[in-house]
Image (cartoon, rainbow, N blue to C red; front, side, top):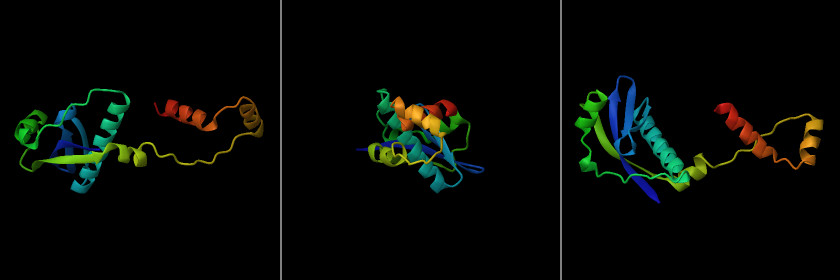
Length: 138
């Protein structure tokens, strides 16, 4: 199912900032307009994906005509002259398959004695590695 939310694009000195006013001012940026658009799709997909997984209430998108770019620019204290509002769309389920849920195979080495001990206890190597990596990155 396609999700579409209005996003405000603001030209900055070194790229573009993107803000989703309906999603608690969720924001991202890019060095070029193309990159900002890609980042906006990724940002929107990630936010909606996590919100769905955590059963959070997701607000309905506003109509483009209801977004006042000048008011938002004033709140952000930025120049609205080179800004615009555009719909950002993403199929969250399809995007997640490729970007959030896709597994990659990793080859690693561990001592033979550790391998034997883990196999004896029926330890799931992939699960342990994922849990350990999540601990490290948090």
